[in-house]
Figure (cartoon, rainbow, N blue to C red):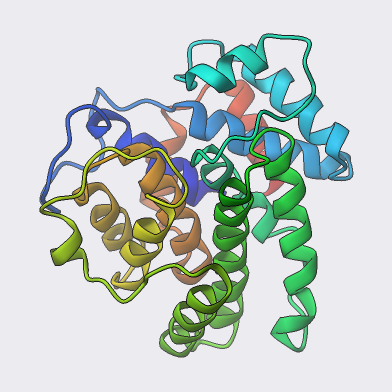
Length: 268
């Protein structure tokens, strides 16, 4: 999940000050972690507890309240600081930006499709405790499955083939338009916090990438909800390419001891 966290930190300074270029400083003093990082850690912690619906609610509320100023959306913030444990039918991309641990919890199988249903199920459970709208669940499942796909591609040293599988199957399963190009999306793309308006774009940013850093630069260059799009793209790119040590080590300097400890315990 460090890939998602790197994307979040790098994109944090561009969320409200979009850029439309890949030529930018990756890390600088204004970067910071946001709710994307906090909630990714919360999902990881919930999976360690067993990944039951109550585990997700408990850990999301626990970690969210530990970082009350991380930049939560209005509906989520009201739910977070209430006693309510029921979902509120969100279709926002919060379900997708936090889901990456669900793409790693299922072991690689001899045949890739053996793990699909488990990944789908974990992603659904992680999403629907808040984001119970079909689009919110769909966005989380698409990202988790993309991670699972690319873990197989990396294990087989065949990323191009698995990128093709990923594009084909996510198009079929989720009706996402993944045939667009970044150069066509970038000029008119604007801020969109919906899963349906940001998850496909984040996946395309990965599909066009050549390595981990290039994927992050692709995502940020789109504009829009930059930290979340980069977190989603980074989570998939980590599974495909791994994360360079220098980027991992630099990102850790933006996290406090508690978050670093959670990542270390998770092996992220």
